[in-house]
Image (cartoon, rainbow, N blue to C red; front, side):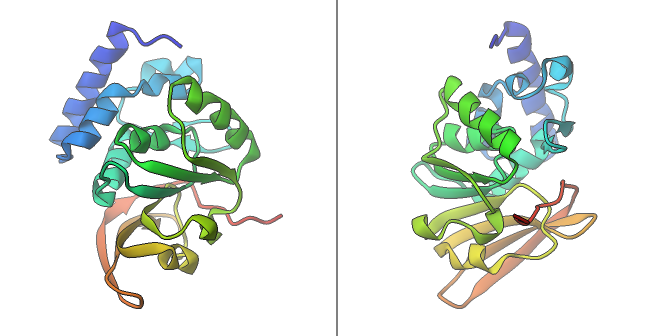
Length: 213
C-alpha cells in the first residue's frame, strides 16, 4: 500500500493531462491528484496507473479512464454533503473520487467478486461509503431516495426509470446510454414529471448488467 513520490509525480502529470482535455472543476482535479489510483489495480499494471486509459480489473470489468471519471464527476456537479448513488462500484476508484469530494455515498455492485474485494479495500484507504450494496443497480436504492445525484459507471442500453424516479428535484443523473458506443447523458430533474436532457459526446464503457439471478 505504498504511495511514493514517483506515484505523486505521475498523478500530477495526469492532472495536467486532464486540464488539457478540458476538465476544469478544481475539486475533481484535486481528488484525482490525491487518490493513489495504482492501488486500485493489479500490481502488474502499476506502471499504467496514471496513463489516461481504462484498464482491466477482476470479473471482466475495467477501471474507467481517468478522463471519464473526471468528466462524469464534473457533470454530476458534486458538492460537499451531497447524497450520491453510484451504480457500479467496480474497483472503487470512482467511489473514492466522490468520497474525497465530500459526498455521502451509496454504491451498488452486482459482481460478487468485485463487491467483496472493494468492500474490504476502500476502508483501508480511509474511504467509507455510507453503504456498499451487492445488488442490481437497475432498480436503484428506493429505501434511501431521493438523491442529489446518481452516477452510472457502465454503459446502459436504456435509461432505467427507477433511477430517474429516485432523483431529488434539482438532482442529476449522469449515465452513458447506448449499446456499443455510449452517449454521455445528463438528466436534470426539473419537477415531479419533467426532466431536462443534455448529451455530452461518445464514450465506451463495459455494459451495465441486469441482475439475472
